[in-house]
Image (cartoon, rainbow, N blue to C red; front, side, top):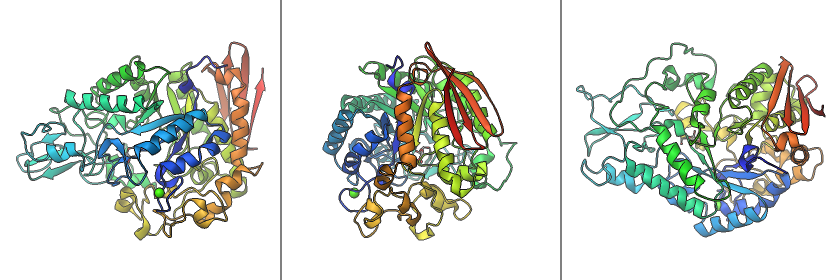
Length: 517
Ligand code: GLC
Ligand code: CA
């Protein structure tokens, strides 16, 4: 019945492949594992899957450091495995989105190995190579998201190179047309394999400007608070005037859009973008102007500390104001980068543990009822909690290893899925050791067990997704009106030509209700 494009209201399920399902008992999830679980996902009723990167990679940032964009990391399988996965997903009416990392590649990529070797090789200007200052120090004061300077010295070239994340993730130079051309080829390669869209990683960190490197100003609002992210020096600076969000990034966006539009069946581009302070929503707006990306993956509900009801409503109001009547926005409460919602929102909303499931069902229904698509993260449909007791020697995330114990990084939301309580490792793998430990506290929420429990979050969500498909106000138009509420309630109307649906989310009783008016 939909008159919208599929991506305007899609419910997208994010798979973190390393932790989803292991098929060959090496303790690492893989593509065949995903294929085995497509049935579980299609019964849940989601529209699409987004798979975090599975390309060749030394796994310094677990796949967000790609060393070959045209091939699969052996841990995860082969191109043939991917082709089988996409065919079966399409047979089950699930669209498939890949996670392309355009801003940086791995320092083990051939491009970088060649580029760093001299100042005159054919790839010499594929990265940001900059002379030191006269005193030998780095060209600017820029810091890396993961700690330390954003510049690393390369003795062979006697120059610094830029990396907004790890030194093993050198930033590509988008001021060089050859780089854009190569990434265009990458898009075509995967679209030709039938991929329905891309989540484009950290697009706001693409750096295009090879000459005008200037210092970031200090963040005058910075306060060293109790939150983990406050501990990181990165947030003592403002970035949008220099290091990030530079206008030239839009050249990449427009060239990707042209490619997507040249394919049939509405290929979708969703960019992960963020901005300084409270600007994520206006940054999103800028990235989705005509001819740029279709939508952006927005951070406003991903707040590490969790959000109050009023803060959630503020985000919805902003979304309505900037994006109403369009599906250019994708909201998420959870992903592979932030503490899990079951833990984080319980605290922020002051909900008691016994009411946790009801709170989570309410948040899922709310998120999915807002205009635009929404992304849910593996395990969110089970109500998995964050895992904060991983011993230091078992930690994997380089960000957490750098800042523990004040900040534990992202392993806490990346432990493997559990499928059957009674199987070894919860059915994730039969290996003696899994790449991150399985959390015992997750076992009572194992996926296959949950799917057969009528009262589980999985089944409540599944029922809701089926009901939603029959509501013209949710499926035929991206119109959201009359957003109201107080510190315990959010309500709004969704409207299409022939239906107005009053959607009410009561955080006192933890119930959602939908009424046709
Ligand atoms: C994005 C990813 C994150 C990764 C970073 C660098 O924010 O979600 O996991 O570490 O980009 O690629
Ligand atoms: Ca495996």
